[in-house]
Length: 190
Image (cartoon, rainbow, N blue to C red; front, top):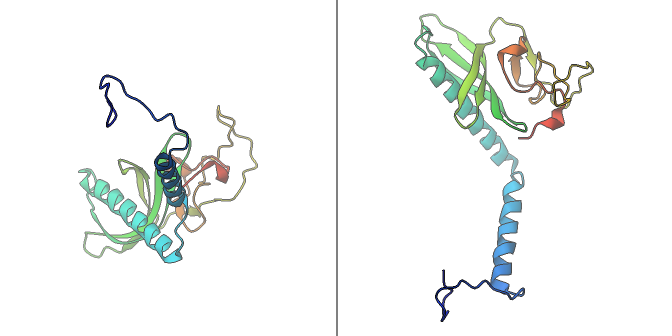
């Protein structure tokens, strides 16, 4: 690829000049933009609105998938998404969400749900009504004392979620969902 104004069109010439001010400005602008993209929103309202949009998207995806399953006789309408948590570990991305939904049967009451979704595809690994069930909150910022480890040497607690905070309610049976069982809260990002 020839450079503009090059007489020998068969060769590409990179700039050998380390003081290329145009190139430096491009690099500086890229670094500034990348740093800005990684910063949390300055306005708390933006963060709340973004979190609500995430919760809405997770809840809508979970119910859509659940309602499209022919084996599920009761179909649900979303009333409101309550809270959610995006979870990123070393290899996977998931989301946990609580929402209120109401069945389409006569005399149905609003129910609290928990769902876990694989992010990207937004396919749920579980959608569970928490009404009448024993529930537990997430244990973000907690440490686990038991010494059950996987191959990576990470403490595992299969009954609790250490990625979500206490507001996000989970089924007491932690084996119903996949993510959040590494009992070190700084393991998760997101």
